[in-house]
Length: 177
Image (tube, rainbow, N blue to C red; front, top):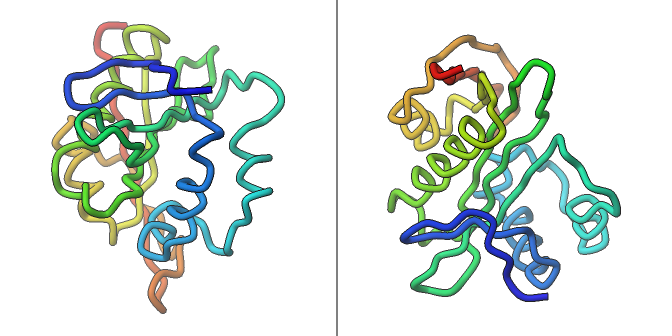
């Protein structure tokens, strides 16, 4: 199939999910370091990934894209808009960098900026929200830097590393609509 660029950037492109990369996805979500931040609690199989990540129908409520590192010519993570509710013009955003060597390099910020631009300027969404675990300091810092405002706090939402942890809810409003 090859790579299909959906959104183009300088350092990264956001690609349509590629079935040829399914082994990479499987590696990421079965890595405990990654899985704890993306709410994957049981090991996943190749068959499950193929079925859930590549449905046989067009899903206009969930858009997940690969983060393609142009210089290194590899997929390093995923970013998505999901639970899109068109009449209310809102959706949720999520991201993970599956290749740990790329953490802390600003790539996640670039990918989220690209998705925000797409959400607000192409889909004409009014609001983007997210829920993040309080232990995920990198994500919280990134989303605050991008202008997301904390809107809520949920107690004892996830059991991580042997203890109950809270989640925070953040939102970003498109001031142009």
